[in-house]
Length: 85
Image (cartoon, rainbow, N blue to C red):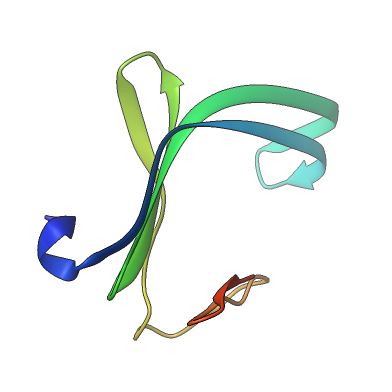
């Protein structure tokens, strides 16, 4: 579990608002807003986040190890001063 990785930060029941407008494969939207509840864990090894779209059922939204290659539009850096995205 994440306890063995050294938990640096844990937040549960975080209110998350997702806003989407545009086109991605399989979805076209003029604008939508949805609310979720999520959790975020930062350990010495990775960042793990979940979003619950169905009550009592959370799916992983992010599970990224800090030593893994960073690909995509978002870059992350964890330092003594905090998490920078």
